[in-house]
Amino acid sequence: MSKRGEIMKDKNQSPAVTFAPKSMVFNMACVNLFPDCQHVTISIDEENLRLIVEPTTEYDKNSLKFANVKNGRNIPRTCTINCFCLMLFDFMKWDTSEKYCISADYQEFDGNKVMVFNLDEAMQVLSKSA
Image (cartoon, rainbow, N blue to C red):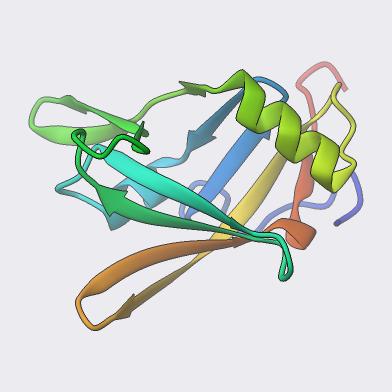
């Protein structure tokens, strides 16, 4: 995990997700990677400490709505998923009074689009009051 106060390169341009103890939000750069999709599935690779995010449909029982549509375009949406986030914070031994941001690696292979987040590269997000 990176040290508090370390600045992520072009946070708004680089695809990233921010985790709080009870919610997560993908930034606009992430949402733009799946422009025709508002739902994703998230898998955890515990051995390699990675989250794997793939586009899906609202009909997939494991889907998470990560974007809303406004004026014909996807926009990020805050996903309130208490159990998942608290489990992730516990698994990674993160401080529950903080937020964490992780950049995405985007990959396409055989027509499949995937965002991969390396959990061990999480950075604490500085609060505005700090």
